[in-house]
Each structure stands twice: as structure tokens, then as C-alpha cells.
Length: 315
Image (tube, rainbow, N blue to C red; front, top):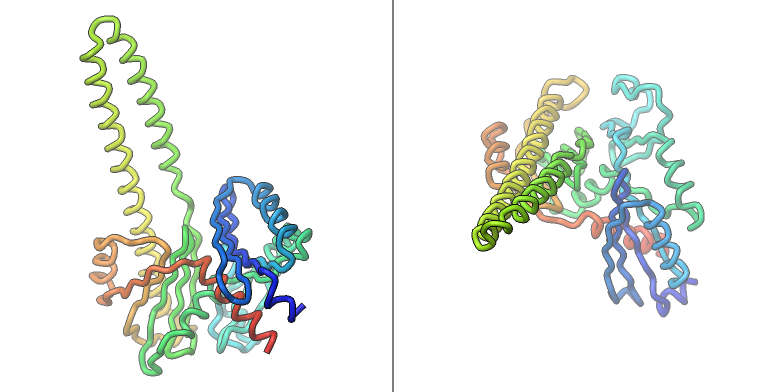
């Protein structure tokens, strides 16, 4: 098989599975050269699995990586198993994995669920904790051994925080934010307003066709502008939720005796989406650190890490 890998196309699939949405990205390589990229969003797990099934029949060599997004996971900056109790993990069944000088943990029920879900495809090849994914990217940077840096990774409605001094992990936190349902209400309101406009138009057509068309166009523009304003408001509201969680995590790091309490020198912010200048001003005014922002693609991160891990097995 190792000999064939040089000549056969290989497909790397990165997935995020949420309750009502599944995000899919695949990259196809031949002899380490990128041939094509495919991105899709599904609203049903079955449709996602059907698509993967088609690809698995088309490509002999394929790998599947999944972003673990459940809330029941965390990081402990300690490898001593005798110290686990003081981190209040609870009574759930968890799996621990070492991450440099720390441990990450995740509820076993989620690992079992995803392995069963992809059982037809020999299970999941890679399950990526957001902590492991963030730390992988941190370890690729030029790191100062003297500076304590807060790294933040924002992907969709998932936020991962990690504080490191050099490569040593001092703190980790993770939060799943509720999906903002206001947008759905906005769409409902927009549909309702459109219906009212249509009714108004039909009525006005009986009297004054030209005036009706003018009013209809004007009202629709107003609805569209309101929709845009609502979206911007919702986005800013979500950004403020993120800010508040960052502030509370920093307070936990500084005030809890379980952590080293080093003064944070820098803040590096990774995200798939852009953040407003106002959001970063709020952060800077609160913690007196100017965020260094890097726009990234999380699913690309996953595919790159999958390739590196496979290459390390072959050496």
C-alpha cells in the first residue's frame, strides 16, 4: 500500500458535526500534490454519510478527521493522576490523553458515538480535541521561553483558550456557545413582512398601480436594511459573549491556586471569521493587551495535521 500511495489519489476529509448542520471539507492529493478541494454544508447527518460513502467508493485511500465539539471536555495542566480530583471533572466517564506537560480529557460517550456513526467506514481515523488542534498550531510558532501568551481559537460557536509559557501549558478552557436563534426569527419576520407587502400591493393595484410599485420597492428595501442591521447586532452580541468568557477565564487563571498565575504578556487570536475593530478594542481596554489576530481555516488545520501524523507513522 505504501508503494501505491505515490500513484493513487488520496482524499483527506475534515468534518464538523453539529445538531442541525454538518460542515465538510475534503482535499484530494496525488503524490503529495493537491488535485482538488471540495467544501459542502449539510443539514442532515444521513446526507453527510451518504456523501462520504460515495467518496469512499471512488477513492481507495481516504482518511476522516472529526472536530470534537462537545462541551464535556477540558484540559488539566498536570500529568500527575493523583491531582485530577482538584480539577472537579465530575463523575462522568472520560478518556485522558497527554499533551506535552498537560492532559486533555473527553467524555467517552462522545468518542463511542462518533466511532459507531462512522463504523461503516472503519471508524474515524482522527478525532481532534480543540485543545490538541490549537496546541499543534502553537508548537509550530517561534516561541519565546520567557513570555506567557494567551492563545484563543474561535471556530463557529466554539471557543478554545490556552495559556502557555514557551511550550509549557499553564491553563486551558473551552466553551460551546448556544447557536443564536434570532436569525431564524429575523427570517420569519422578513417572510411575514413580505406577505404583508404582497397583500398591500394587491390592494393598491386596484386603485393605483404605479404608486403601489413604488411603495412596495421602498418597503422591501427597508426590510432588507432591517435584516442587515439585525445580523450586525447579533454578530456583535455574540462577540461580546466571547469577550466576557475570555475575561472570566483570565480571572480564573489569575485567582485560582491550581494555576501558576503568571502575568499574561501577549494575546494571539485565531479565528475562521473576522472580528470587528470594536470587539478588539473592548478586549484591549479590559485586559490592556492588544490582540494579535490571525485569520485561519480550522478544517485546513485538521487536514494538515492528518497528513503530518500519517507521515510520521511512515518514517
